[in-house]
Image 1 (tube, rainbow, N blue to C red):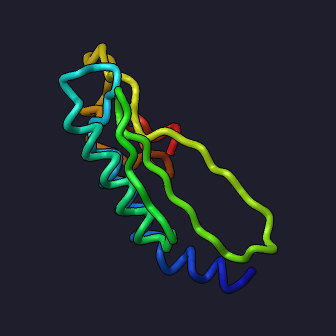
Image 2: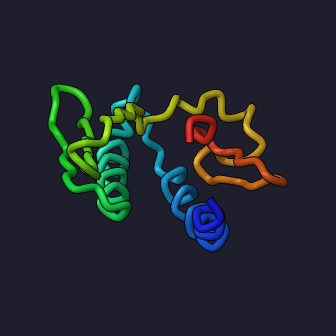
Length: 120
């Protein structure tokens, strides 16, 4: 457990920077004006899975937005763990209720305040 804590502590800023980079992508899937950004988020998600060591990463096209799939095979004897999530965010309207731009993350004390961070 000490090794894990040490790893997390020594990489904390990198993890935060990577998260902030993702949170800047306005991946609003409910608004067609953001389709290119949703695609960009799918590609960024796939890239992060590869960087994290996933054995297989695919972007599957659908009639709507793409599905990002990744898998990591540790051992055939190990149990299977499924993680399901989404990479899109809710529309930021009404904008006048935001203290800062919704896709420009702000760190206040120990909390993130961009659109989508609650799920991150």
